[in-house]
Image (cartoon, rainbow, N blue to C red):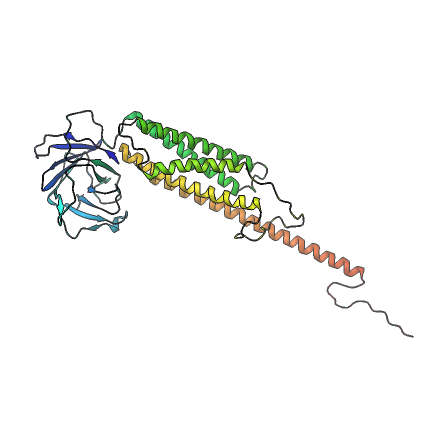
Length: 402
């Protein structure tokens, strides 16, 4: 989570500090030895949520949620991401709650004790991690924007007027992160799936699929390499560098190492083993779940497993990156559209694969029928050569009448 700078604020409500969370959301607060007074001002009409979180995650935290439709401000336990699982906290600790909407603004205010049952829950010094969420309307539903940030509530405030919101980085960095996301999408939503589906549908292009497969994997590697370099350089240029502070960062580096190994290993494929020319080419030796018994079969098994693992990791990376981009720059999340693309692509691949399997099944049955006819024909020839018929167990017998 990004570190927020405390700005000095002079308001009629007695709040002495503020922080710009997004271009449309400002947090005001006043910290006393006994409690923390908070006011959130949104330049829109929508429900608001604010809470303290150890790891910056929603699940497992407690948040204050203001619902304009119900005109309530209460604490909720966030046990899951689904709306139905969010439960009202049995022992409410907040006081002096208020939720108003006027002139196109939403203002949420509350007072929360710094201690509970003798334990400090709000630190007066040092960085604490907070979460917030903004609805799309007054109706409580999936949030339009959410984020997390780290703030020292007791730090000296700054009179600067140039501070940018935590959810709105410098435009140069925004462009760099947009390029980072576009290249990652081309690598793991286009090139890598195309490489895998080409291998799955190799019977449609039997002579050229391997070249398309290799070329697509090399493109995915190159785009991933450039994507990681952009991320490292851009993060180093930021005011508060956060190298490897999120699983997304670690997964990106591991993804680069794994795809490098996958591409290099692709050129080390063992040669084709000698095969019985009389074996039916439509039959898979040992079945679908057989354990590889040759170096080439083992290579194929590991290559497929690593490829699918890379694709799944890449998909997770993209959805996580889209979420982080929306949180950092206050942009509307396009994650639902991404999952829609994944669903359509996956369904299309599944339909085409089923069609190919059906055609292969028909071809197999055709081969078996031809083999049966040829076998019966050979029996007829043999039977006629012996003076009998293949459906008759009797054979010609000569009797001596003398």
